[in-house]
Image 1 (tube, rainbow, N blue to C red):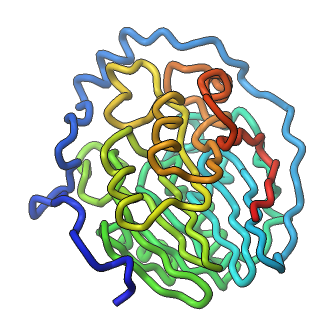
Image 2: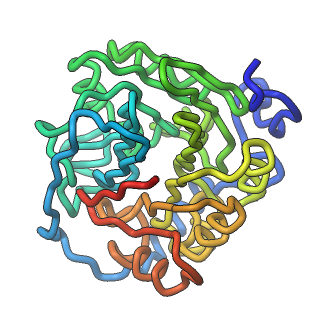
Length: 318
C-alpha cells in the first residue's frame, strides 16, 4: 500500500444510491435555479475576446521542471519528465450537450488542437459539460496513448462512447501508473448531465505524485474543510490548480464554487508554493463577468504565489 493511502478515510459521501457532500450545505435545487435565472443580474461581458496568443508546448520536457500551460477554463497541460497530463479537457465551441444552445466560448483555446503533444493521462473531475466534454474526449481517445481517470461511477458513459482505457477512483483511492501515482481527493460540488441523474456519479479533485513532487488539481469545488484534510494527509503540494470563477451570486454559488477570496484562503491552508487560477476567462457560467474573477483574485491576494495565466500562457516551476 502506498504510504499516502494509509490512515483515516475521508468522510462518508455515498448513501447507497447517490453521492453527497458530507457536513456541508445543501447544493441548490431546481427551484433555486429558477429563482436565480429570474433574479439574475449578470455583469456585462463581451461576447468574444480575441486576445489569445496560442503557445506551442514541447512534445516532452526534460530535467526537473514542471511546465504548466493554461489551455482554457479548467483545461491545464501538466508536463514533467516522463509524463504529459491534461485536466478536464474542452476544445468544443460550447459547454453543452447541444451545438446550438448553452454557454459558448468567449476566448479560443490557448493551445491549438494540432499543437497538442502526446497525452499520457486525462483527469476528469466530474461530469458537468464544461469538464467532461465528450467531443474532446473522443478526439483524445482516437489519437491513442491516453489513459483516462474519472470519479466513481463515471466510467460507464465514457466506455459507451469507446473512450478508454478508463479507470474510476473514489475519494481516498489511488492508481499507480508508469512515472506517476494519482490520488483521488474530496471536493464540494455535485454531478448531473440531465434532469434525472443528479449525484449518481462522484466529483473529486486529484493529487498527482511524480518526480518527488505533488500537484493538486482541485476540479470544481466550494470552500470547505477538505483543503486542510488534504494537507494533513499528503502534506503541502508543490503546485495547485484552484478554481476562482462562476461564483456570483453567492447565495446560489457558495455551496459549489469558491470566490477568489476563498481560493486565496485555500491556497494558504494548503501552504502550496504556487497556485494557478483555473475555471475562469473562457465560458460565462454565472453572474460574475468574464474577467472579474481574475481581477478580484489579484486585488485580494495578500502575497505572491497565486498566478493568473491567460489562455496559452505557461510557467516553469522548479
